[in-house]
Image (cartoon, rainbow, N blue to C red; front, side, top):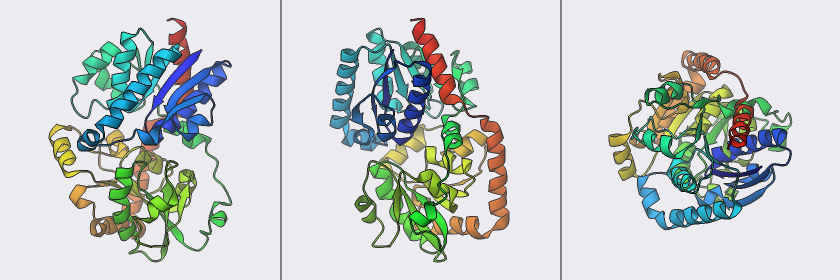
Length: 370
């Protein structure tokens, strides 16, 4: 069959690649066309648009980049019509993908949505639109099942695909030696995969972590950037930026400073104590604080429904406060042990790997009935 996938950020590229792999195992003649990144491209098919040209975060940032976003939407719609896929698979990225879903539904295409839009966070009435324009919704967070049930919507809960990625990962035993990291314990800096995240978070991350000279800082670089891009935010400090090795970095890290997003859950799954950071445009934050109806921003805390990892948002996200929290992770044994104990409980709540395989099987089942 012909599959058209749309992923608009690094996490979507990861989950899209794993889903493509699972689909190929069940459909040897699978043909793929997609918006995505390097990981999806490694699985074959045709890459139409790279996600780095699409990832805009925040209300104000979207307005400033509206011309580019509208152009990307037009490109995607035209390409889908020309390709005429058997099934359209939309991966997270709701601001863009819900518009694509509506268009696809108008053109009688089968719409599968993998990784539910986080409508439980704000404007919950969007569920009504999802019911109208999405044929099959695959959810990956345990609490989403009850949420959608309360809105009268049947969904498929498939488990979390990060478990697949972590389970499939094999650490590189020579990682430290390859990157000359043998001498000190590591503080991992994960500043995100968008330009806005990196520019706003990395200077504060580096300034805070440099207060711990007995540790080595290592930046997990996103594949859509070069080392020079990161260096401008490191104020001349000799900090290695290592690409395509986030899991190896986490395997070797004593603690981590992490941009809010999928990486917070990945960090927890690797049992690395962390501080979660978020800083955005002031107007965007003001709007979000009025609209968003959730207690936490990190997936770890949302899944556990309690404060497991410290979240530093906007004015609290500064080198002094970050360093205070980082000091607790590195030097307060009780604080560190309690976080790791909660990670064990998180593992139990997350369940077992298999989300990619389950989703692939369901997509094939639904497409065959079309």
